[in-house]
Image (tube, rainbow, N blue to C red; front, side):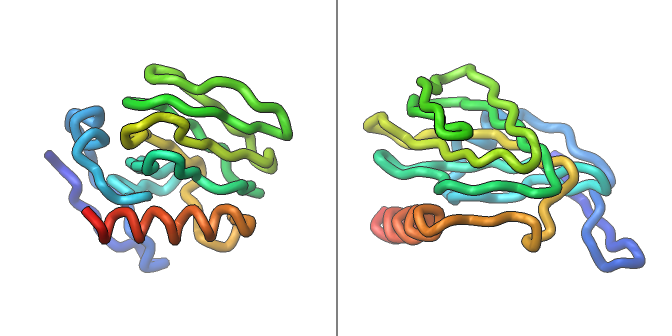
Length: 144
């Protein structure tokens, strides 16, 4: 597994390369969100959403997001429309679209996400439900 990074002049980590079984990494992941590899133009992330948890309603003003559901089932809310989201689904969220993903199952929902460009933390708006989801996820992880 190669997760080496170097620091560019801007002190942002830039991936030198990555090659591994991302499904295996996602299934083992217990963190709400963990960056696996960050490059100059995209970021690879694994996520775990607890039963009845959610991403939290959010928008990424300057980044597209692609979500791949590895395990679990839930519902996607994209621009106010709700639809089923299941194992093996790929979800493309364009920059600026309001979205949320809820775990409606009894087990952890495991995801792989790609952000392009990588989020800087300044262009993501997480609404109140997102903050609550993050708190619940942290509490769930602590209880494990």
